[in-house]
Image (cartoon, rainbow, N blue to C red; front, side, top):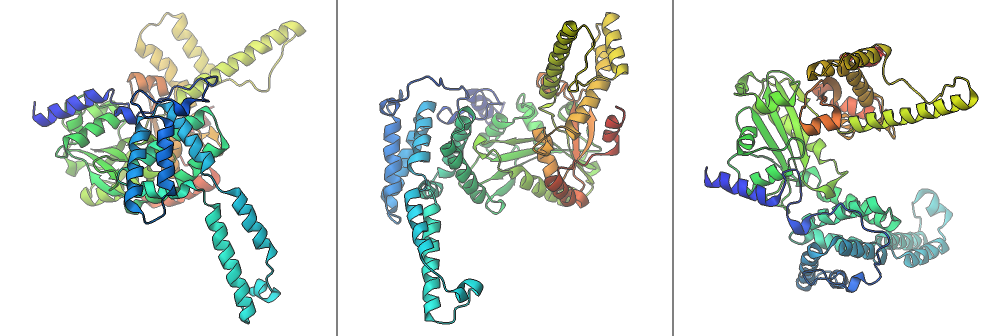
Length: 510
């Protein structure tokens, strides 16, 4: 084994499980909910095991905010103290600090009200108010007063933490810390949806979208020749299909495969998001054939670029659609590098399908039990308008026969379950919605980027995770380049989901 291979292997093991995105302990985000009854009244004075308290970090934050603009050296020193201190805090300490930031450094509403009172007390001549054209010095003077007041109002409406975020973003390592701050915010909002934290998150998200614009990002093809530290991050951050070993990693970076990442100069050596591509003769039906086909076809024979994994490395960038821009850049690059490619498709998981199906089944069982009890009391039949038959009559018959005949083979049971699960999966992808958009998060991502739902594939992912998430079913989303913009606009404006005729056929059979 080469020194490089050994380094990747050892570092990946030290970081923990490959699917845990935060291996560096100071940055790890605890998902355990705090005890609501826990006394937080004295927590600011309690130091963590490393001797850093939330009070210390708050003081460094206050100092970095209060230093006038232009005083760079002391501000940088305080920002560095804050950055190191924040990463050393416990989750409880981080929560306390973010609450203080959201409440104590919010918009100065007293100042806003006073400026609004002044603004409303100034009168503007009818001539200037009607067409904004001044005819004399008096109008010019009044307009100048309004412009000055409006500028002051805009400044006053900015929260006081706005300047802190700007300074932190300009500080070395600050952008990565801001992503960690937002990841913590999202965890705390999931536990307690406080308006002040919600406003802080909304503002920080808007700033991150600006700072991470496509123009600021660098596209890089990741290969086996990259540094061991970068390859180790790919192993650790891969979120869809865990990389099993170094042979698997090398294969994903070799002939017939591509891996591209978006990087930001402020976070060197670490992709914000990366995508893995297989170059194939046709659209794959299962992840097994993508990960295990050996040897891969010559690249000159490839007709299909199959996107089989896309992983975001920063939980704090949730809701910021970097994947959309990454996909477009990668498609453009592949069209130039491999002109024979005519099909751009995905082989995607359906992470919410089984959860939705089991929830549906549970609710139908409860309704059936309630109807039975009601029928007993009334001594008559009863039917509920809320009940629906998830299984068709023929499907129920096949499944019952497979059990009554003591069928034990996996293939026989799989054959019995395939028709209803494939039909219900098509319904889930095409009909089940949340706020007018696809309920499934992966489907929503690809549909808003302009893809169509092309095909669903039975037993396409037979891993434990694949069976638990979607009963082993995977889906192909296809990007037809001439229709991407039209499909995306249609989906975003009306929620219409574009699908192939073969997929719609499942719904017509009901």
